[in-house]
Amino acid sequence: MRRSEVPEALADPRTWPGVDVAALSDERRDTFERRERAIYAYLGGSSLASVERETGIHRASVMRLVARCLAPHADGRIQGLRALIPHSRTGQYTRRSPARRRATRGGLSGALGQLFERFPELPRIIEREIAGDRLGMTKNGRLFGLRDVQFKLLATLREAGLKTDEYPLNYDEMGYRALSVWVHRRLEQRVPLRQVGSAAGAWDATSRPYSVVELDGHKLDLRVRVRYIDNTGVSVDIESERLFVVTLIDVATRVVLGWQLVPAPEYDHHDVLSALQDALRPKLRRRDFIIPGIGYHRGAGFVADVMPELNYACWDTLKVDNAASHLSEDTFEPICRFVGCRLEAGPVGSPTVRPFIERFFGSLTERMSRKVHGTTGRHPDDPLGKRGRAVPVALLITLAELEELLDVCIANYHATPHDGLNGRTPLEAMQLAVDHHRTPVRTLPLALRSRLHQLQSVHLATVRGNVARSVAHYVSLYGARYTNEVLQRTSGLSRQRIRVYINPNDVREAWAYLPNGADLGRLYVQDGWRYSRHTLRLRRKILRERRVGKLRFAGEQDPVQIFAESQRRQGKRGRKHGTLELQLQAASQPAPLEPQPRSSEPARPAAAPLLDLSDLKIQNC
Image 1: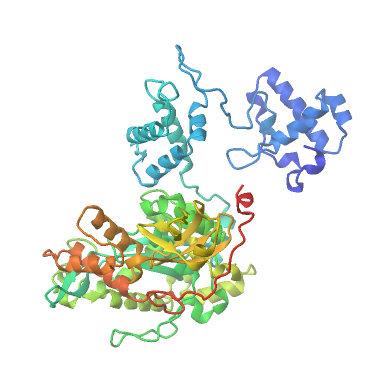
Image 2 (image 1 turned 120 degrees about the vertical axis):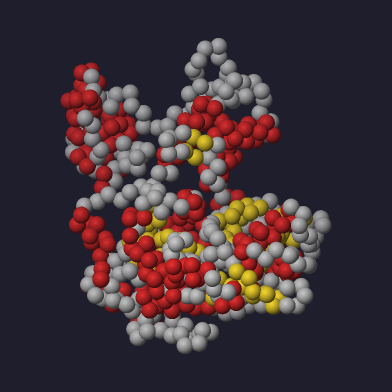
């Protein structure tokens, strides 16, 4: 690498990662010091001829050493002066020769990596097992689930046609030790990074709005009622399982940015991403209420009510815990890339790492959960919980009332003085912090505000279709076909893998993009799935019922209605049944985040533009 090609920010070798020369032997120390003098002299402006004459290092070797020093290191920095250590590697070893069986031990360096390059589906299997918590590490450092994963990998290799005289089938342990080392290193990469900095920098970060936000889920300590009409036409009230609320709060001002009420006993990564989407959208106070006598306090509201210039504001650091729905890398990779933030995960079982969100949950429990008829209390011996568990089901709160009550409580919380804010309310603290700090709050660009669906996990779906049978192009997602007129009329997409983003709150629609990023528009579900609004959680439940033989539907039959009728015919009326009814009723409500309501079968444009796919294969190379 020539001197003119070195970036200006890396032109000073004194800023590079250094080396402790005392750890080197005399011979290696001499070689290192000559290389170091050559690098300093060359980057300092000396000619290659003078550098070669003074250090004895050939001019071609000097430029090669500069390129080695600027190569990336596994720790995220450049190699720096570490690349000048004799016999050190700056690149990862790649095996070229096939791994043959040997009479003696050894000779298998890079064999597993070579196998993964040949069969790229093997690392994906391991990633799915790790994300599903079927493969991991115990607290004492032992792996669990590795043997099952090895069996799955071997089965995949045999199906792919791997011969018995090829690695790893030609060894007794079949690559178990190498796989164990690889999984250990992969799990080490999943250890969350802790933010390290000076005290002054940490104080400035936590005093600036939208600099640090905290995310967590909380199980509400109250009972919820659901009412439905059974198969005899009688109105029945039953109790559901306890619900979760996923919340995002700003550390500097204690303002609640967004939340997602989850009508299920546990939340998943789709609920987490929906809460983050809600935090980006502007939220205003309600105008109509269904609970008699309820209302906002004076000064209550949300950020969009008092500071519209902060609509679609972005944060810098997102702090989460190590819950199962948080550990998936697919959960936060889109949000970090989309918003431009960094992720900071705290250790397991340490809620004090996120004290502000935990303190808000305590306030929410005191101001809402414990004041509602049917509260479950903090512990089994709580007197208030004992009285709440004795409340009849007919007097419990409903999901619609709970959503309204949660909205009002959070708005009133924003107008309540806080001791940690020197007696100011969160909204006052937000206004004062924005006026005080010179650094403006980042907001989402206008081009991205209409693409919040890209925060969800992307699905790589294969375009299907059959010209001979007059079957137009479509993609399959979660047991249903999706298409639109643009996809049907665009040629050259057959057997291509396109990028699809779903709406987990209404899976009747999805957004599609070509592999090169070109927009294909909004896709709509086909057949009977299009009639009733339903969530992704509900569709998975329906597909599971059909898979085990408890439900049958096909064609234009509405699976959601068939599932609802089957639930009403059941004799059991437990809390799990109440949760399913709650999900059915919640899904049947119109989507609150849509700017305009749409019908069950959306209207399609009269003429859809054709996309030029002449360079599709070139752009995907």
